[in-house]
Length: 576
Image (cartoon, rainbow, N blue to C red; front, side):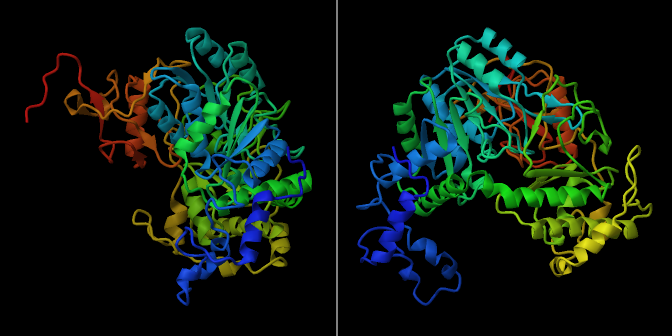
């Protein structure tokens, strides 16, 4: 095995190819970028990448039968991330999730235990495998109402009910960087002789610094998919799949990976995976120093703006933290310690007063040159990484100060930005403003009304008047706590028989069996699956999403006024 961590075998081979300057009589057709000639108005930005955009030729190896530089690069990745074997993915974590499911579910009808709030790529894997999924209710952080991984008790009950399950699949961390120790889940799976699969798309950096949560592999997971491009330094679509132990058939896994990925994998993407690994491998925990310093600077500055809160796990001896104060229904009761770990690079902020919705806050930040990762009806997720700087922190702090000042002047009932929530000492924002003035001209980023929104208009006044909706209306957070796990739901690629289905108003759909998938987007996490009985709680949930104007994928009626359900047995068929 290659152990020279300072090497980047694949990138070195591609660099040699570029320097050699050989004439290309192979694909791709742009011929190292020369096809664009003088028409380089936009192509010049891609010129460097096109010079290493090659195919499987002598010296560049083959991703699906590696025996040269790609094999060496993957071995180095395994050493860096603590795996027994690692595989480069050029189709993002999507391809890894699908390949893992196709590996463990080898026969149509195989049962797999799946955390309900998973990415849609997991569902596509279930469809391709013809598997039956038993969906596990996620754990719930009570103060924020956000879903995390299923509890060990939920998994234990599901394993007892379905001892023939082939594997369990969970997501850790979630989109907000929230998580918990998954070692008990791995132990339960192993006691039943099955692998634990983890979609760790947002945790490629986990376990690489003392201030970061433990990685899924170190907690005992058997197969782990990571989006190296999300929280490390690879190019978009660059991801890795890591495996350990004997519970996953690796020969079959390699065959599945070749099935679901392109036979013409992108060499620039693979090279970026090699370089991202090398950066981490050679610099170790120190590679995160600047990014963590930026996060700390932001947190210090945010403390001087007590108008805004920061999502964080409950602290020992203190009330649980969260965003429940933002007005609306209290979420269901959660089991203890559902949320114990927070990715420090995910700064999840919210308006403590509830005056600004997360969506409005995101748009206001974007108008001031700060583009968040995402938002929901209450919160905004600011994603920092090893590439973040103190200038980034200063910029977003300036934007928050500017937003508050603008909101104070436009609101009929202005909120006092320097006034802390009840029970906390007031802090002055003037100190923060003085500090920021000497650190850059951030007003150059301000473009009021830069985004046109037909519903809200384009002025700051309208933008900042959008208030938080009730906390039970969210495309990011959906739950139904009526049962810890579902009955097995069969997935298939077979088209729906139109004669067996009918549209039903969402107010009347309780008790019927869903015949379509409902996927609020973003984030692309389904809340209802074909073959699943619609409960009273879910029917209310659908009505809430409809009334809030939420965008959903997978549904025939984009307005969500109706949902497609299976006809009851004996019901008359439609007449053409």
